[in-house]
Length: 194
Image 1 (cartoon, rainbow, N blue to C red):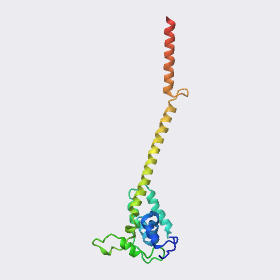
Image 2 (cartoon, rainbow, N blue to C red):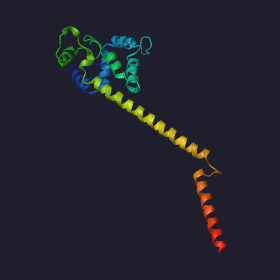
Image 3 (cartoon, helix red, strand yellow):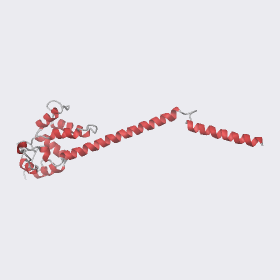
Image 4 (cartoon, one colour):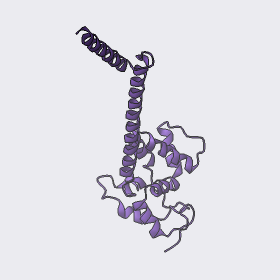
């Protein structure tokens, strides 16, 4: 098998295909590296912040930011829109020359056979993995919010105890001590009357 150079680190075609089917990170990078102009256009079309003439890494950072934003319910849809780009079989980097393989992985065409080869449809489960990653960040955000609420409740309860202290003693303990002293005084008073 022919060795592919570039960002693939000298992987063979077979190794690249295996990574496309198993490695989310590699799959996203493959799509960006294959058609960066289309990725840039899709990001700009969503009005997401992106510097002028962005590097592939900067475009990847936009996708990562969407994945990590557990509060954006449309994050996975945005990622889907960003990575649905035509495959460039003539790319001169490690991503070119996989047209036949990707075509063989494409589901049978429905009525529109000229839809073209869209990489994201073919690279094993990228959007499913993106959804899973986004959900984990969303759960993390929810847990952080719940912890924040618990911390605020604890702080409120501690502040309430501090505000009700009498002579540096919590009010309920102070009342119990006064009640106990009154009980002892009453017992002593009744015992001295006999």
